[in-house]
Amino acid sequence: MRTGVTRRSALTVIAGAGASMSAGRAWADNPSGRVIYPVAIPVYQSQFVADRAGFFKDAGLDCKLIQGGSGVKTREIIASSQGDIGIGDITHPMQLSNHGRAARVLMPVDTRSNAAIFIIRKDLFDQGITTLEALAKWKRPDGRKPIVSVSSLGGTNHVWASYYMEVMGLDDKVTWIGTGNVDTMMGTLKTKQVDVLINSPSILKDSVEQGWGALLFDGTDEAVWAKYIGGKVPVTSHFTLQATIDKDPPKMQAFVTALWRATQWIKNHSPEEIYDKIEPYVGSTSRDANIFDCGVMKKVTDYDCVIDAASFERGQKVWFREMTGIKPLAMADVVNTTFIEAARKAYPA
Image (cartoon, rainbow, N blue to C red):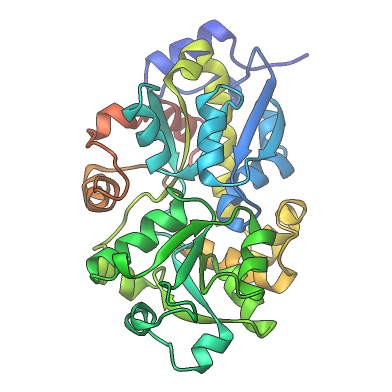
């Protein structure tokens, strides 16, 4: 016999903004769910852990995790209501809200980016192009600007890497292109179709060890982040449409509760244990590279899963600028704290 809250009592939990859930569960009356992630890297590990550790199932959800192919494609899937909840740059729900599809951030994933790493072709690094300034001065053999690859234009890599280039006055010195998932991103750098790839620690480690990439600039470094960003910012988030919330609040509570539990599981386990749990989802890069990435993520994960006013304000200089095209939004217009507050009370950290 299944025990837990009914739809009526779950709605009472939500309306009360955090009343404790009976038996600590958030059962979904409609168990089928579609969870969308961009590409196969550990930054999206909270979804992977929620699936592999059984937290979705424990919340009454029968979930299918679907790789969108990029952050922008993930946003499009959520916008079309073909997915219940997505993970990606916090600007994605902002973009949706700006374009008439009211969206909400349900919980933050991290406190700074782990995917703003500039990886340059090894042959160019060996030629002395070892800084962003040197890259901006260099021209390709045909006279064109250097080509910088990100997963998708408008995705996390692009948003944060372009901000660094912008504040350094270098943003117009390169050509940005989107190259999709992990395999194609690495392939374009390895075959010299692009000159720089912006991505995660695992891809950096693999490219260095295989001899075709080198670190040019680390925008995830704590000191660099403090200099240019100034402190904690929610970079990645779990998000959905307001219409999806309105359709089935208990189901959304079940998602958030499972993801909260996954985040606490990550906090209490080693990078090796995290990798062993999520391995089926991150097979495009090596075990060592992924364990390294999981270690980086442990340092930047937001284990409180709360966006405060200061961190939201700090991020506005990155989110609301000409490059993103996002019109400013108030925190209350894009962040829904109700579900994470209920999850935190049901499963105290």
